Amino acid sequence: MQFDSNLAVQVEDVTIRYRATYEANPTIRNAVLKWGKRGQRSKKGVRIIEAVKGVSFDVPHGTVLGIVGANGAGKSTLMRAMAGILSPTEGRIIVNGRLSTLLALGVGFNGFLSGRENIMLGCLAAGMPMDRIQEKYDEITEFAELGDFIDLPMRTYSSGMYGRLAFSVSINMDPDILLIDEALSAGDAAFKEKSFAKMKELCAQARTIIIVSHALGTIQELCSDAIWMHKGELIRQGRPEDISDEYLRFLNIGESVLALEDV
Amino acid sequence: MTTAPTVRRSELETPIQVFQPHKASLPPMRPYLREFWRRRRFAYELSRTTQKADHFDSAIGKVWLILNPLLLSLVYFLLLEVIGHSNAGLAGFLRIVIALFTWYFAMSCMTAGATSVTAGGKLILNQAFPRALLPFSSCITAFLNYLPTIPVYLVMYALGLWIVPARDYNPLVTGVTPAEKSIESALAGPSWVLLWQIPLVILLAISGFGLAMIFATMTVYYRDTTKFLAYILRIWLYLSPVLYTATTLEQKFNGPHHHLPHNLGTLMLYGNPLGPALAIMGNIWFEGIPPSVASVVGAIVWAIVLIVVGGYFFISRERDFAVRL
Image (cartoon, rainbow over all chains, first blue to last red; front, side):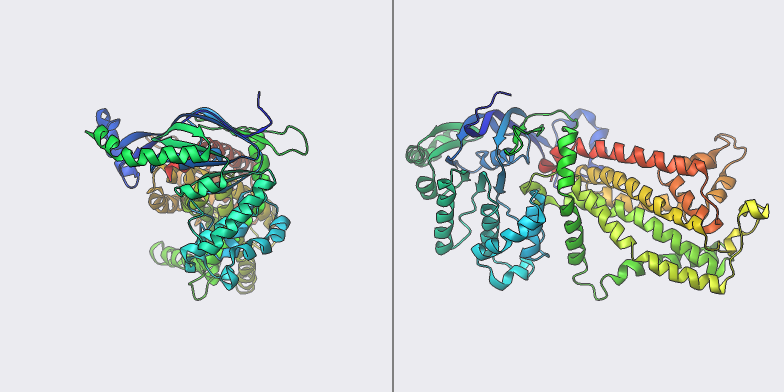
C-alpha cells in the first residue's frame, strides 16, 4: 500500500451513495406488498442519494482542517466515513492514527444512564481499556464542569451540558486525529473559550483536527486549512480566510443562483 | 461498502486503517475478532448498565427475572393439568419450571438480541466498533438473568424430592424404558447426570448468540420482525421438547403417515435448531439418564451451524447498519 506517512488522513476519490426509503419504517408488510407488484418496485419508495461525489483531499499530520458548506453538502456523511462508521461506495479513505469522533449526536446514547456510565460505555466502545478510562475520568468530568450531574441520568441534562460532556470525552481521549462535527456551538462563551484553548493545545502537540462548522469565525480562528463542499462536491480547498470569503460571497448571491437552478 | 483492514506498520505505531468499498462480504476476520475480543468489557458493561436502566422504574426490579418464568410455569402447569388432563402434580410443576428456566435463557438471547442493534442506534452512528458486540451483550444479559434462576430451582427441586419421592428411571437399572412408565408424574433423583446442564447451557449460549445475530439483522431490515418473533418463539416452544420429552415427541409423530415421512417426529426433533439441546435437558432432568449420543452431536452441530450462519449473516451486513437506522 503506498501511503505518505506525513498524512493523517487521505481521502481518495470518495463517493458515498445510500438508499433512502420514503416509508417511515421498512416493514415486512410493505416489502410483501411491493414484491407483489415487482415492476414498480424500483421506482416506488426508494431513492438513491449521492451524499458525497468523488471527493479527494489530503490531511497532513498537525493540520487543523475546517469543512464548511451549506446544509446537505455531505459534510457529516464524509466525517462518518472518515470515522469508519459509514463506508464509501467508491474510492477509499486511509486513516493513519487513533481517531476520536465527536459527531453531531454526542456520547449520550442512553438517556436513562448517568453521564458517568455513558462516558464509560463510549470509551469502552472506542476500545479504551478500563484502567485508562478510570485515569481519564476525573479529567473528563472536570473539563465538562458537570458537578453532581455526572451521576444523574443524562435525560436530565440540558443540551449545553450534553454537548460539554461529549466534547470533553472526545478531547480527553488523547486522539491522534479528532473529528468534530458542529459541537462547539453547544457550550456557553466561557466553555467555548476553554475548548478553543484545549484545541490549540492539541494543535501544538501536532495532533490533527477536522472540524465541521457553520461558524466561519471558528474556522478562521482555529484552522490552518479549509475545504468548502457543496451538494456532495468539493468546491475548493485553501486558506481558511480565502475559503470563508468565497463561501460568504457564494452564500450572498447563492440564493439567486440556486433559485434559477430550481426552475 | 468498506473494509477496515488494520495493518500494523510496527509494533509501537498506531494502525493505519483503510476504508474502501466492499461487496456484501465479510471484513477481514482476524482484525475483526481481535477488536471484538479487545472490547469484550464493553459488551459486559453495556449489559450491566442497560439492565440497571431497564429496572429503574420497576418496584421489585430484578425479582421479575425469576418471577417471570415462575409465573409462566404456573400458567403452563395449569394449562396441562386442566386442559391437557395431565395428572403430574408437584413433580410436573417442577419439571415445567426447570424446562422453562432453560428455555427462557435461549429465548431471551433472541428477544434481547433482536432489538440490540436498533436500540443501539446512536452508538452505531457515532462510534466504529464491531457491531456483533451488541447482540453479544444481549446474550450476556440473558446469561446473567439465567444465573439466579439456578439456585431458585435447586431449592424447589430439593423440596420437591422431599415431598415427592424420586423414582429411578435409569432404564439400564430397571430394564424398563422411561416411556413405559408414566414419567410425567415423577422426578428423576439427583445424580451426576445433572452436571450435563453445564455443557448444555454453553451450547445454548452459542446457539442463542447465533440466533440473536440472525434476528438482530432481520430487525434492522424489517422492524416488525420483533412483533413476529413473539409468535415464532411461542410456536417454537410448543414444537420443542420443553413441556414434554423428546421421547414423547418422537413417539407421537413417528409412525406410518400417508404423505409425510415415517420418522417425522425424529425430523422435528433434529431439524429444530434447539431440539437436540432441549432433548438433553429432558434426558437429564426428567429421565435421569445421560443424554443420547445423537442429541449431543445434534446440539453441537446446531450450535456451530447457528454461530457460523448467524455470524456471516450479521457481520457481512453490519457495515450497512449505519445507513439503515
